Image (tube, rainbow, N blue to C red; front, side, top):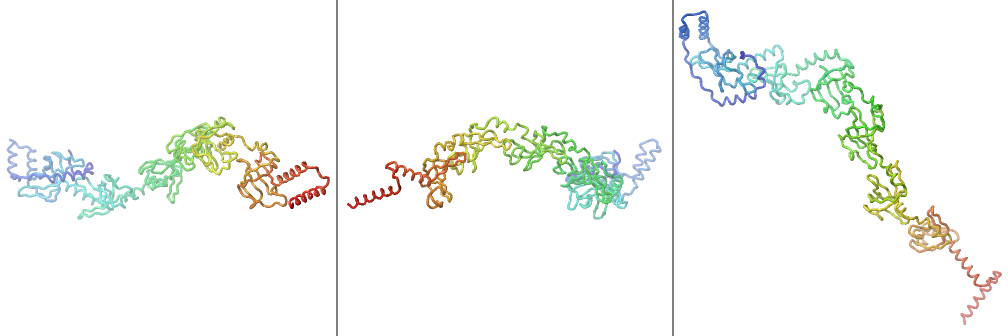
Length: 624
């Protein structure tokens, strides 16, 4: 192996493992060094000389080197080169040319992976911490020798204002702890939060273990404090890049940049010392829920320069402008009446948006979702993510709108219903719903027919349909009308039976005498029920001879009353009655009967005379 004297980049991240090994080694007792009695230099030289019969120039030079080493005086705190003699589990033996070898704990040679970095024969630099000429014992340290060299490097870099490489060790209050040098002899430095980046860093934990260059702001060797800055170097680098970028930046250019920050309204992209804003509306021709769904900090992106203010250094960027606007060919690609497929990307109260391709969305209005069902919200039919088939209803490229229909994919059931149930057809179904104005009867899936309250009975006065039916009842009805445009299906129950008003003229001929119960008394007349569902009106002028007077207070509801039919109108559903004409008719009838029973007098005087004679005779009989 080569000489181990420089800071090894391979072991920059080995602090945790080295500390673990150090703790383990601390628990294991290091065998005490046995003093070795040094041999006299003269004796060692003579011994070497006697081994050969003849002395050579090489032997002489080796002898002189050994002699000089034996006379060397060591100083504590000195960094000395030594050779690794042996490597054990707990210690490494190093020969520095003294009469005895030094033992260094093995933990000082452990890298970040927990492996020793030396083997016998390697040349290393060590610090002589203590030595005793009397007994020949040595105390050496490899890590302290490296640490001293790192400090020398730090001081030199600070004075020369040169950057140094560090490795992030941990996050601490107010910033980060970084290490200058490797895990064995490196020294820790403080990187304040304000000096980490040009902008507040969103995640310091992500920087643990990273390596980067910093400048040394200050140091105190006595207290072993070092303060560094990464921001200072980044700002210098940005200024240089900024000059180059500003000199070459032009509107319409296509450039590459790096995502630096993500907000709700867009993305800031570093173009090289200057940031441009990529607004959320310029990311894609299609829908972008949030920029963070598309980008991450650090992403490299290709953008187009939309506008550039050189004085204010403001740059507007776009990505969608790198491709053609899909709406330019929308009318050609999606003609009206065409069946197209897409993905539901959003739901609102009034409809669902369907993506036909990136940048082109169509709206299915809630009214275009079903032929038969009343859809109050699109979620009753669709969900975000659904793949659906639709029909293009209208395309407006200028307004960037496409109207789609979901129900148009299937035949309109109202077309079939009109053919299947012509007017006059008697159908049977269950009452599905009851309202104040009528009954809804299920005809087919999604199609209900309405029986209006006025079509429930010819004769009964119905205040609410629930008086006659309840939900779930199976009833028959007659198809009255089907309005395809308004999607209305009108039914009637009373039409199952003949209209009693059609035969009213035969049952209540003009001049006939009828009787019934008074149902209502008003200032203009009296209503009389002749039979269930058929009423006649005695107008105030037909109550009595003379000037009409209000019948209110003279007649009561529920009283029986007789009158004469004076007119019948089945079309208007009216029957006119008269008490006055009935009385006149009775009077004429009385005189008619009376005249026919006796000889008719020739004069009015004779009639009166006859009447008086009869009266006198009656009085005489009474007196007797």
